Image (tube, rainbow, N blue to C red; front, side):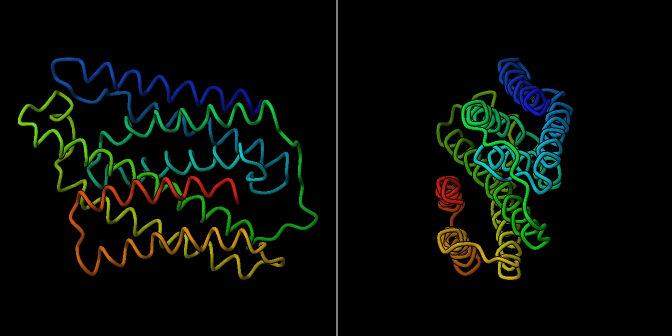
Length: 256
């Protein structure tokens, strides 16, 4: 049943992206009205998948690469629904959905080919659960920052072209994107800090590789945030840095 939930969620996010792409081709160029309802539906299906996997393992469902990818996607969608409107980034979901679709297709393939099955712990450690949940929620915030960075670069290119497309008129003002970028990086850094702190309170400490990788991601984002707060990075440089940092963070998932 969990595979059905994940397949449904993947189909929903593909449909959301297709509808958004079609709306950009219309004269108005406005985002499709089903953007948020589809995100909510997709999140519900992701939650059902994670619930079923959690029941299977008797713990937070991050026991293999496929589950970690789905948890990151769930975090991305959740952060979009919680923060998208607050940061006036209504179009953020349309850019989030294709990324979630691709990552979940990879998760489906992983689970179809290499699902290790149930992996219940000998003893449930609440600090381990907090470490895992906060760390992956941080990845959601970092992913959203990277997506906002992509939107900023598109907006900047459109402005400089002096021939903006329909997409330009449906995107938020570029100053909102710059503000959202900094705040999303800060939110992710705080969540990851909580996750790393929880790791040192676990009954069994994570291995050296896990701590090194988590620490490396934290250092990258802490430095990015510190430099931005100290020198006020130009928005374009901040956008590129957020994209590069998230690419690095995604690459480290294989070692976690």
